[in-house]
Length: 385
Image (cartoon, rainbow, N blue to C red; front, side):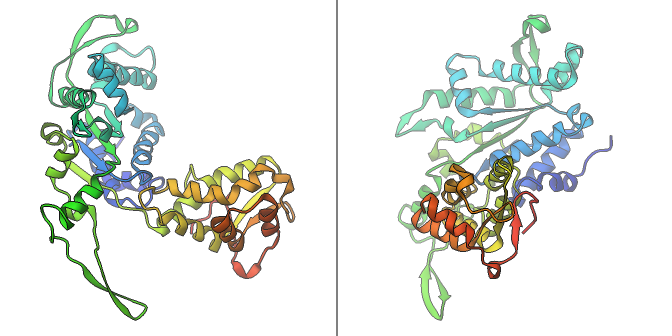
Protein backbone atom coordinates (compact mmCIF):
# COMPACT_ATOMS: atom_id res chain seq x y z
CA UNK A 1 0.00 0.00 0.00
CA UNK A 2 1.39 3.43 -0.95
CA UNK A 3 2.21 5.91 1.81
CA UNK A 4 -0.68 8.27 2.57
CA UNK A 5 0.04 11.98 2.22
CA UNK A 6 -0.90 14.31 5.10
CA UNK A 7 -3.46 16.05 2.86
CA UNK A 8 -5.21 12.71 2.21
CA UNK A 9 -5.34 11.95 5.91
CA UNK A 10 -6.59 15.46 6.70
CA UNK A 11 -9.39 15.10 4.15
CA UNK A 12 -10.49 11.86 5.84
CA UNK A 13 -10.29 13.26 9.39
CA UNK A 14 -12.12 16.46 8.42
CA UNK A 15 -15.23 14.44 7.64
CA UNK A 16 -15.66 13.98 11.39
CA UNK A 17 -13.75 16.89 12.89
CA UNK A 18 -15.17 20.34 12.13
CA UNK A 19 -13.56 23.72 12.67
CA UNK A 20 -10.11 22.56 13.85
CA UNK A 21 -7.90 22.89 10.79
CA UNK A 22 -4.61 23.32 12.65
CA UNK A 23 -5.18 20.33 14.94
CA UNK A 24 -6.22 18.14 11.99
CA UNK A 25 -3.15 19.14 9.98
CA UNK A 26 -0.78 18.53 12.89
CA UNK A 27 -2.30 15.12 13.49
CA UNK A 28 -2.21 14.29 9.78
CA UNK A 29 1.50 15.01 9.46
CA UNK A 30 2.31 12.94 12.56
CA UNK A 31 0.12 10.08 11.38
CA UNK A 32 1.60 10.13 7.87
CA UNK A 33 5.09 9.78 9.37
CA UNK A 34 3.90 7.03 11.70
CA UNK A 35 2.26 5.03 8.90
CA UNK A 36 5.44 5.38 6.83
CA UNK A 37 7.44 3.82 9.65
CA UNK A 38 9.19 7.08 10.53
CA UNK A 39 9.56 8.93 13.80
CA UNK A 40 6.86 11.44 14.68
CA UNK A 41 6.79 14.11 17.36
CA UNK A 42 4.35 13.86 20.26
CA UNK A 43 1.40 16.26 20.34
CA UNK A 44 -0.30 18.09 23.21
CA UNK A 45 -3.77 19.44 22.40
CA UNK A 46 -5.40 22.14 24.53
CA UNK A 47 -9.03 22.98 23.95
CA UNK A 48 -12.23 23.65 25.83
CA UNK A 49 -14.74 20.92 26.49
CA UNK A 50 -16.57 19.92 23.32
CA UNK A 51 -14.07 21.54 20.94
CA UNK A 52 -13.21 18.26 19.21
CA UNK A 53 -10.20 16.75 21.00
CA UNK A 54 -11.73 13.36 21.66
CA UNK A 55 -13.52 13.44 18.31
CA UNK A 56 -10.15 13.83 16.58
CA UNK A 57 -8.76 10.85 18.47
CA UNK A 58 -11.81 8.79 17.57
CA UNK A 59 -11.47 9.83 13.93
CA UNK A 60 -7.90 8.52 13.82
CA UNK A 61 -9.02 5.25 15.40
CA UNK A 62 -11.85 4.94 12.87
CA UNK A 63 -9.49 5.65 9.99
CA UNK A 64 -7.06 2.96 11.08
CA UNK A 65 -9.91 0.51 11.55
CA UNK A 66 -11.42 1.30 8.13
CA UNK A 67 -8.78 -0.67 6.23
CA UNK A 68 -6.95 -3.91 7.10
CA UNK A 69 -3.86 -2.47 5.41
CA UNK A 70 -3.94 0.60 7.67
CA UNK A 71 -4.74 -1.46 10.75
CA UNK A 72 -1.67 -3.59 10.08
CA UNK A 73 0.56 -0.52 10.12
CA UNK A 74 -0.26 0.85 13.55
CA UNK A 75 -2.14 0.13 16.75
CA UNK A 76 -4.00 2.83 18.67
CA UNK A 77 -5.26 2.84 22.24
CA UNK A 78 -7.02 5.59 24.18
CA UNK A 79 -6.69 5.98 27.95
CA UNK A 80 -8.20 8.46 30.38
CA UNK A 81 -5.49 10.28 32.30
CA UNK A 82 -7.21 9.57 35.62
CA UNK A 83 -6.82 5.85 34.93
CA UNK A 84 -3.09 6.42 34.49
CA UNK A 85 -3.07 8.20 37.83
CA UNK A 86 -4.81 5.28 39.54
CA UNK A 87 -2.43 2.79 37.94
CA UNK A 88 0.51 4.97 38.94
CA UNK A 89 -0.63 4.60 42.55
CA UNK A 90 -0.20 0.83 42.07
CA UNK A 91 3.24 1.32 40.57
CA UNK A 92 2.49 -0.21 37.15
CA UNK A 93 1.07 2.35 34.68
CA UNK A 94 3.72 1.70 32.03
CA UNK A 95 3.16 -2.04 32.09
CA UNK A 96 -0.62 -1.63 31.90
CA UNK A 97 -0.28 0.68 28.92
CA UNK A 98 1.97 -1.77 27.07
CA UNK A 99 -0.51 -4.54 27.83
CA UNK A 100 -3.32 -2.46 26.26
CA UNK A 101 -1.21 -1.98 23.13
CA UNK A 102 -0.32 -5.67 22.92
CA UNK A 103 -3.94 -6.73 23.41
CA UNK A 104 -5.11 -4.28 20.73
CA UNK A 105 -2.43 -5.55 18.33
CA UNK A 106 -3.69 -9.09 18.89
CA UNK A 107 -7.24 -7.98 18.09
CA UNK A 108 -6.02 -6.41 14.85
CA UNK A 109 -3.64 -9.11 13.65
CA UNK A 110 -5.40 -12.17 15.04
CA UNK A 111 -4.77 -14.55 17.91
CA UNK A 112 -2.52 -16.71 15.70
CA UNK A 113 -0.06 -13.90 14.96
CA UNK A 114 3.46 -14.59 16.31
CA UNK A 115 4.26 -12.83 19.56
CA UNK A 116 7.25 -11.08 17.96
CA UNK A 117 4.92 -9.57 15.34
CA UNK A 118 2.46 -8.48 18.02
CA UNK A 119 5.23 -6.84 20.05
CA UNK A 120 6.50 -5.02 16.98
CA UNK A 121 3.01 -3.72 16.25
CA UNK A 122 2.47 -2.66 19.87
CA UNK A 123 5.84 -0.92 20.22
CA UNK A 124 5.07 1.28 17.18
CA UNK A 125 1.57 2.22 18.32
CA UNK A 126 -0.32 5.44 19.00
CA UNK A 127 -1.23 6.28 22.57
CA UNK A 128 -4.06 8.78 23.09
CA UNK A 129 -4.26 10.22 26.61
CA UNK A 130 -7.55 12.02 27.19
CA UNK A 131 -8.02 14.71 29.87
CA UNK A 132 -4.27 14.94 30.52
CA UNK A 133 -4.91 18.10 32.53
CA UNK A 134 -6.29 15.84 35.26
CA UNK A 135 -2.74 14.66 36.08
CA UNK A 136 -1.37 18.06 37.05
CA UNK A 137 1.55 18.06 39.45
CA UNK A 138 -0.23 20.29 41.94
CA UNK A 139 -3.84 21.07 42.78
CA UNK A 140 -5.15 23.76 45.08
CA UNK A 141 -1.64 24.75 46.08
CA UNK A 142 -0.75 21.22 47.16
CA UNK A 143 1.25 18.49 45.45
CA UNK A 144 -0.93 16.06 43.48
CA UNK A 145 0.94 12.79 44.00
CA UNK A 146 -1.11 10.65 41.54
CA UNK A 147 -0.64 13.31 38.87
CA UNK A 148 3.10 13.51 39.46
CA UNK A 149 3.42 9.73 39.26
CA UNK A 150 1.32 9.55 36.11
CA UNK A 151 3.47 12.21 34.39
CA UNK A 152 6.61 10.36 35.47
CA UNK A 153 5.23 7.07 34.16
CA UNK A 154 4.49 8.62 30.78
CA UNK A 155 7.96 10.14 30.71
CA UNK A 156 9.43 6.69 31.29
CA UNK A 157 7.59 5.35 28.25
CA UNK A 158 8.26 8.39 26.07
CA UNK A 159 12.00 8.65 26.61
CA UNK A 160 13.15 5.13 27.45
CA UNK A 161 14.26 2.60 24.86
CA UNK A 162 14.06 -0.38 27.19
CA UNK A 163 10.99 -0.86 29.41
CA UNK A 164 10.57 -4.07 31.49
CA UNK A 165 7.30 -5.77 30.57
CA UNK A 166 5.82 -9.04 31.82
CA UNK A 167 3.92 -10.72 29.01
CA UNK A 168 0.38 -12.00 29.69
CA UNK A 169 -0.11 -15.74 30.13
CA UNK A 170 -1.41 -16.15 26.57
CA UNK A 171 1.90 -14.73 25.31
CA UNK A 172 4.17 -16.86 27.48
CA UNK A 173 4.26 -14.91 30.75
CA UNK A 174 7.97 -14.13 30.71
CA UNK A 175 9.48 -10.71 31.42
CA UNK A 176 11.10 -8.95 28.49
CA UNK A 177 12.33 -5.46 27.61
CA UNK A 178 10.25 -3.43 25.15
CA UNK A 179 11.63 -0.53 23.13
CA UNK A 180 9.03 2.21 23.59
CA UNK A 181 10.90 4.96 21.74
CA UNK A 182 8.74 4.51 18.62
CA UNK A 183 5.42 5.14 20.35
CA UNK A 184 3.52 8.28 19.35
CA UNK A 185 1.78 10.07 22.23
CA UNK A 186 -1.13 12.44 21.66
CA UNK A 187 -2.32 14.01 24.90
CA UNK A 188 -5.33 16.29 25.19
CA UNK A 189 -7.13 18.24 27.86
CA UNK A 190 -9.47 21.16 28.48
CA UNK A 191 -7.09 22.75 31.01
CA UNK A 192 -9.95 24.44 32.85
CA UNK A 193 -8.79 27.67 34.46
CA UNK A 194 -5.83 28.16 32.13
CA UNK A 195 -7.72 30.71 30.01
CA UNK A 196 -8.64 32.76 33.07
CA UNK A 197 -5.12 32.55 34.52
CA UNK A 198 -3.48 33.82 31.34
CA UNK A 199 -6.13 36.54 30.89
CA UNK A 200 -5.48 37.71 34.44
CA UNK A 201 -1.71 37.74 33.84
CA UNK A 202 -1.98 40.09 30.85
CA UNK A 203 -4.72 42.34 32.25
CA UNK A 204 -4.19 42.53 36.01
CA UNK A 205 -1.21 40.35 36.92
CA UNK A 206 2.54 40.60 36.39
CA UNK A 207 2.09 41.54 32.71
CA UNK A 208 -0.65 44.07 33.39
CA UNK A 209 -1.17 46.34 30.43
CA UNK A 210 0.19 43.90 27.86
CA UNK A 211 -3.31 43.44 26.44
CA UNK A 212 -4.61 46.74 25.18
CA UNK A 213 -8.22 47.55 24.39
CA UNK A 214 -9.07 48.26 20.76
CA UNK A 215 -11.80 50.43 19.28
CA UNK A 216 -14.71 48.54 17.78
CA UNK A 217 -17.38 50.18 15.62
CA UNK A 218 -20.81 48.63 16.06
CA UNK A 219 -24.13 50.04 14.88
CA UNK A 220 -22.46 53.40 14.25
CA UNK A 221 -21.02 53.61 17.75
CA UNK A 222 -17.41 53.24 18.87
CA UNK A 223 -16.60 51.22 21.97
CA UNK A 224 -13.48 49.75 23.52
CA UNK A 225 -13.08 46.00 23.67
CA UNK A 226 -10.42 43.60 24.99
CA UNK A 227 -9.88 41.00 22.28
CA UNK A 228 -8.15 38.09 23.97
CA UNK A 229 -7.14 34.81 22.36
CA UNK A 230 -5.30 32.27 24.45
CA UNK A 231 -3.05 31.21 21.56
CA UNK A 232 -1.66 34.76 21.31
CA UNK A 233 -0.57 34.96 24.94
CA UNK A 234 0.06 31.42 26.21
CA UNK A 235 3.62 30.78 27.44
CA UNK A 236 5.30 27.61 28.64
CA UNK A 237 5.49 29.22 32.08
CA UNK A 238 1.67 29.29 32.19
CA UNK A 239 1.59 25.53 31.69
CA UNK A 240 4.28 25.03 34.34
CA UNK A 241 2.21 27.06 36.80
CA UNK A 242 -0.86 25.03 35.85
CA UNK A 243 0.89 21.80 36.83
CA UNK A 244 2.61 20.47 33.71
CA UNK A 245 6.21 19.71 34.66
CA UNK A 246 8.96 21.11 32.41
CA UNK A 247 10.28 17.60 31.80
CA UNK A 248 6.87 16.40 30.66
CA UNK A 249 6.15 19.40 28.42
CA UNK A 250 9.56 19.14 26.75
CA UNK A 251 8.61 15.74 25.33
CA UNK A 252 5.99 17.29 23.03
CA UNK A 253 7.08 18.64 19.67
CA UNK A 254 3.79 20.48 19.14
CA UNK A 255 1.39 22.22 21.49
CA UNK A 256 -1.84 22.76 19.55
CA UNK A 257 -4.59 25.07 20.79
CA UNK A 258 -7.99 24.20 19.42
CA UNK A 259 -10.13 27.10 18.25
CA UNK A 260 -13.49 27.97 19.83
CA UNK A 261 -16.23 26.68 17.54
CA UNK A 262 -18.14 29.34 15.61
CA UNK A 263 -21.88 29.32 15.04
CA UNK A 264 -21.25 28.08 11.47
CA UNK A 265 -19.05 25.25 12.81
CA UNK A 266 -21.74 24.30 15.32
CA UNK A 267 -24.38 24.36 12.60
CA UNK A 268 -22.38 21.88 10.51
CA UNK A 269 -21.86 19.65 13.53
CA UNK A 270 -25.54 19.83 14.39
CA UNK A 271 -26.70 18.89 10.89
CA UNK A 272 -24.01 16.44 9.77
CA UNK A 273 -22.17 15.17 12.84
CA UNK A 274 -22.21 11.39 13.22
CA UNK A 275 -23.05 11.71 16.94
CA UNK A 276 -25.19 14.83 16.67
CA UNK A 277 -28.31 15.00 18.78
CA UNK A 278 -30.38 15.83 15.68
CA UNK A 279 -29.37 12.61 13.97
CA UNK A 280 -30.06 10.60 17.11
CA UNK A 281 -33.50 12.17 17.51
CA UNK A 282 -34.26 11.50 13.83
CA UNK A 283 -33.48 7.81 14.37
CA UNK A 284 -35.70 7.77 17.44
CA UNK A 285 -38.67 9.33 15.65
CA UNK A 286 -38.13 7.04 12.68
CA UNK A 287 -38.61 4.10 15.05
CA UNK A 288 -41.98 5.68 15.90
CA UNK A 289 -42.93 5.98 12.23
CA UNK A 290 -42.30 9.73 12.16
CA UNK A 291 -39.88 11.70 9.99
CA UNK A 292 -38.17 14.58 11.80
CA UNK A 293 -37.35 17.76 9.88
CA UNK A 294 -36.04 21.14 10.94
CA UNK A 295 -35.96 24.40 9.02
CA UNK A 296 -32.69 26.15 8.29
CA UNK A 297 -33.54 29.21 10.46
CA UNK A 298 -34.47 26.91 13.34
CA UNK A 299 -31.25 24.92 13.06
CA UNK A 300 -29.17 28.07 12.87
CA UNK A 301 -30.91 29.51 15.93
CA UNK A 302 -29.94 26.42 17.94
CA UNK A 303 -26.34 26.75 16.75
CA UNK A 304 -26.28 30.42 17.69
CA UNK A 305 -27.61 29.60 21.15
CA UNK A 306 -24.84 27.03 21.59
CA UNK A 307 -22.22 29.53 20.40
CA UNK A 308 -23.09 31.74 23.35
CA UNK A 309 -21.32 29.17 25.54
CA UNK A 310 -17.93 28.90 23.78
CA UNK A 311 -16.31 26.92 26.59
CA UNK A 312 -18.77 24.08 26.11
CA UNK A 313 -18.25 23.75 22.36
CA UNK A 314 -20.36 21.08 20.70
CA UNK A 315 -21.70 19.96 24.08
CA UNK A 316 -23.70 23.18 24.22
CA UNK A 317 -25.52 22.02 21.08
CA UNK A 318 -26.91 18.99 22.85
CA UNK A 319 -28.19 21.10 25.72
CA UNK A 320 -29.83 23.68 23.44
CA UNK A 321 -31.40 21.03 21.22
CA UNK A 322 -32.56 19.01 24.21
CA UNK A 323 -34.58 22.00 25.41
CA UNK A 324 -36.33 22.05 22.03
CA UNK A 325 -36.85 18.36 21.35
CA UNK A 326 -37.50 16.97 24.83
CA UNK A 327 -41.29 17.58 24.83
CA UNK A 328 -41.66 15.83 21.45
CA UNK A 329 -39.54 12.86 22.46
CA UNK A 330 -41.46 12.37 25.70
CA UNK A 331 -44.69 11.61 23.85
CA UNK A 332 -44.15 11.49 20.03
CA UNK A 333 -47.73 10.44 19.32
CA UNK A 334 -49.12 13.61 20.91
CA UNK A 335 -47.25 15.91 18.51
CA UNK A 336 -49.09 17.28 15.49
CA UNK A 337 -47.62 15.28 12.63
CA UNK A 338 -48.51 16.28 9.05
CA UNK A 339 -48.17 13.55 6.42
CA UNK A 340 -45.91 11.57 8.72
CA UNK A 341 -43.53 14.51 9.25
CA UNK A 342 -42.78 16.39 12.45
CA UNK A 343 -41.31 19.77 11.54
CA UNK A 344 -39.39 22.02 13.92
CA UNK A 345 -39.53 25.68 12.92
CA UNK A 346 -38.01 28.91 14.18
CA UNK A 347 -40.98 30.06 16.33
CA UNK A 348 -40.98 26.68 18.09
CA UNK A 349 -37.26 26.88 18.77
CA UNK A 350 -37.49 30.46 20.03
CA UNK A 351 -40.30 29.53 22.38
CA UNK A 352 -38.41 26.54 23.75
CA UNK A 353 -35.15 28.41 24.26
CA UNK A 354 -36.78 31.39 25.93
CA UNK A 355 -39.39 29.76 28.12
CA UNK A 356 -39.06 25.99 27.94
CA UNK A 357 -42.55 25.11 26.55
CA UNK A 358 -44.89 22.49 27.83
CA UNK A 359 -45.51 19.45 25.71
CA UNK A 360 -48.83 20.86 24.52
CA UNK A 361 -47.28 24.21 23.54
CA UNK A 362 -44.47 22.51 21.68
CA UNK A 363 -46.89 20.28 19.81
CA UNK A 364 -48.97 23.30 18.80
CA UNK A 365 -45.85 25.10 17.57
CA UNK A 366 -44.85 22.06 15.54
CA UNK A 367 -48.21 22.10 13.82
CA UNK A 368 -47.90 25.77 12.85
CA UNK A 369 -45.65 25.26 9.82
CA UNK A 370 -44.64 28.52 8.17
CA UNK A 371 -43.45 28.02 4.58
CA UNK A 372 -41.80 31.45 4.64
CA UNK A 373 -39.45 30.28 7.40
CA UNK A 374 -37.35 28.34 4.90
CA UNK A 375 -37.03 24.99 3.21
CA UNK A 376 -37.09 22.14 5.75
CA UNK A 377 -33.75 20.38 6.26
CA UNK A 378 -34.13 16.70 6.82
CA UNK A 379 -32.07 15.36 9.70
CA UNK A 380 -32.26 11.90 8.17
CA UNK A 381 -30.82 13.02 4.85
CA UNK A 382 -28.02 14.93 6.67
CA UNK A 383 -27.80 17.72 4.10
CA UNK A 384 -24.84 20.07 4.28
CA UNK A 385 -25.50 23.65 5.40
